[in-house]
Each structure stands twice: as structure tokens, then as C-alpha cells.
Image (cartoon, rainbow, N blue to C red; front, side, top):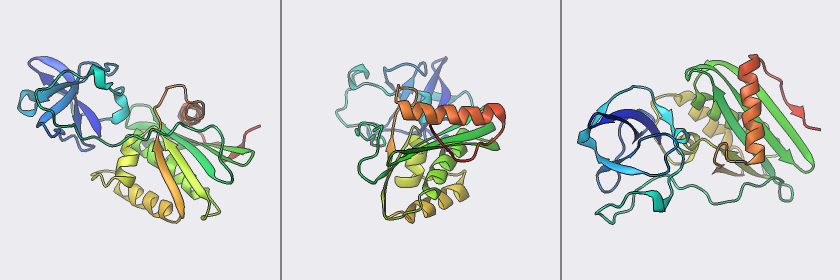
Length: 236
């Protein structure tokens, strides 16, 4: 899912949309809106009352997650459909011989200079990647980070858990979301993931104090800031 700016009775709001910018309605026929990106209180509005204010599309993480108690009461009891978010506690160490990966993308301007960061853990080893991708979008950075993690797995039989703060990436890679952009990258990433016999993707909230996600973010930001790539390095 994604967000775009609309106007509602003269007020500028953020409205829920798909990655192509089409407004998404729930089972009650209304669109989820927020008055500010940091609002945890979710409101609902009729699609006909929303007018386009900006063509820029923001990924799902642009707005914080709403809390059930913060949603305004609705007359209907129908549940709102949205991508399921895993409740797995983000691990800091691999279990047994599994491989853990935390991935992130960064972009200045969106589109603009973009990069990625990956942290991979297996056994007692932690490897990190900071890669500059040139001009692109945040979604390209997020997808390519997942691709790099999958490409780095040499033993295809091992369990691999990949954590990302991009619901867009999880949606287009595992939930059948239709995407008008990044089609070749999505196809390639799916193909590489398919070579792994036991791989799972999980959502982890960004900038929420998850240590390894923060490291991946720092690696991505460093690539964009320095306009350079480090290659895979082993953390001390």
C-alpha cells in the first residue's frame, strides 16, 4: 500500500492508495486518511469527497501504524482489509544454522540518489553491505537490498529470514500486488528468492529502535551520502 496527498473539504490530507496512486477503499467503501504522517488516529472518507492535490506517491511507511483504539468509530462493523503484518519479534541473532538478513533502502528526493544497506548474520559472523545505486527511488533501494541479501546466500537449503521495513516490497514480492513500475526488478528478485528452499520475508517497523534495522538504514544512508559502495565487509 501507499499514500498520496488529497484535499477533503478544503483540507490537505494523506489518503491510502495503491502503488500506482489509485485510492484504496475498504470493505465499507471508504478510504483511510490521515491529517499528518505522524497521526496514529485513522479516519475514513468517501472516495467521492477526495480530490487530487499532489501526484507524489509515498510508500506505506510514510505514515505511522494506527492503533485500533485510535481509529474513529464507524457505523459499519466490516473489517478493513490491509496487508498482514507479522508479529514475530525481530531477532538479533540467528537460530541454529539459519541466516538472518536486515535490509533497507534510502533515497534523497525520491527519485534521486539512492542506495541500500544489508546486514547478514550466520553463526558468529555479521557481514554488511552499503551500496550506491545512482538515481532511483526508495522502492528501488528497498527491493534491491532484498535482492542482494538473497544473492548472498550460497547454501540454498538453509533457512533464511529477511526483515524489511518496506511493506511495498513485501506486497509486490509475496502478496501479488500489481506494480506499474520496477517490474523487471520485481521479477528478478522473485526469481532469486525462488532459488532458496526455505526463505521468509517479514515486516519490521522502521526507526522503531530495532538495532539491526537501524544498522541497515545507516548503511543505506551512508551509500547515498558518500555516493559510493563499500562492498561486503565483515563487522568486527
